[in-house]
Length: 144
Image 1 (tube, rainbow, N blue to C red):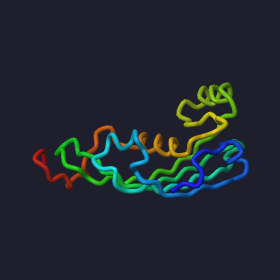
Image 2: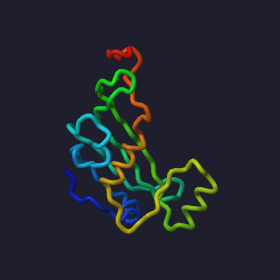
Image 3: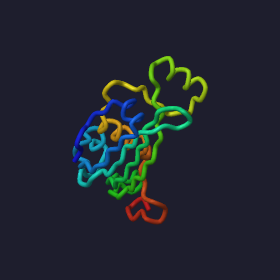
């Protein structure tokens, strides 16, 4: 499981700390609501560091989730490999300035206590397809 579920993101980044772990899919309530099954594990690594002078969190996630194909309505296994670099803004003003300078930048506000599992769940949810489908040629349902 996970030794600690919250971190101080700025301290974590400045100390170049790292957390790795495996978490059952069933621990992610919002995620499992959209899955066919809650079986399986999410493997992750969260690493603190710096990038271009900014404190950052580097997040790697590996998981396989079971989704329902919107074409044939059959379940299928969807592999996830997520790698994110998330700059940490020290305050709201810094975050707003970064967003003005680069609207595509995904940054986090460095709150005193960041929930690691919530961060992982958010990143997985953001990476899921809007309309899940088998890969081309793999759909074996009636709609195929």
